[in-house]
Length: 178
Length: 267
Image 1 (cartoon, rainbow over the protein chains, first blue to last red):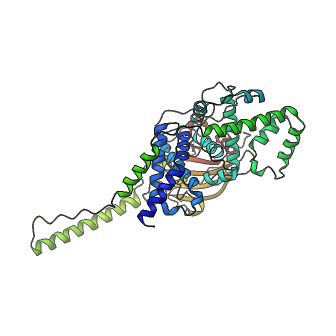
Image 2 (tube, rainbow over the protein chains, first blue to last red):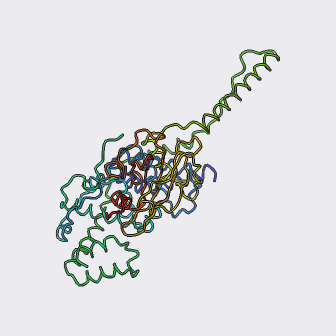
Image 3 (cartoon, rainbow over the protein chains, first blue to last red):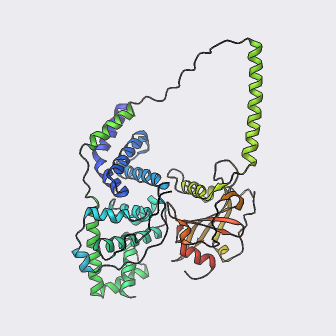
């Protein structure tokens, strides 16, 4: 692929997917500036490793994987989370769920309080609409782990967003960075 | 099956496998079909799920982001490849005899340095802090390009006694010991065992066993405790077993089920 072709392909990737990547990165990182950095980093990586994209129809998925890996790599040394397990919060009633008005900022605040082990599969499920099997393959974990994390993560979001959970950090309390 | 169990079962089961005839899922479905409250709650949860998926996308994209990205990418593409810097011309010339003498001296020094470095690398065991060891293991296990694979590890080189102490947890071990080079200096810094206990409250993962003198700031605990666990990107916990330090990474299960399995007691 010569330089002109490569530039054209990259331009098309940006035009088609930059909004989606930015939104995914925002939900992952919880910050507009981090989201922009991650989006930029992902496209730079894509430009340099364009040969790895063999199936153009999988471009979005490939780019989102680059974002996710870049995010996890940046987080690995920055954040230590004490494992405390999921505290049981009361599940909201059908009426409470129906009456809940979902606010994007509140959703983000709830996501921010989830450890990455829960947030990443939650985003792959809700944002990318992946099946459990696909999530297990992407994260290279057994499907049972995905089932457990999604069940607990979804239950947490229901409780938190409907107001039945009053605890600020019901899943794992983030500790100070090392 | 009661309402709570039925809803929990259906909540955890992958939608794409709904058609498969798992007995517990069938029982849960039968319960829900016969229970109006459960049907209503399941409907509300499904509707809530859809609304969460929609809300996930509700992020305003900054104005000018596309242009900034394209500009950065164009700048990056325009960067020339690294060009080696020209070697500066020699400042002064030396006669042939001096040149040969310097050449021989340099070669001898280089040889001595290489021998010394080889000895240092192969014989000296540098202690590693527990934090560094965990970070390095995290990196190896979660390497996006080539994650650590148990099968690819060599047999442990036996540079310390890595036999596991007696106990119920020996039943967990399904493979090993293999060896792993943690600090990249060659030789095995830890023995690696694969653990697997199938079942609903089973555990699966890796045990890394270190000689005590190799680990700085070893944990005091003699069993895995949650307060001593780290959670990114794999849940892991360290403790002392006999005179060895053990770090366990869990691909399945959590610290409480691991502890119960090790102690041979119910979780």
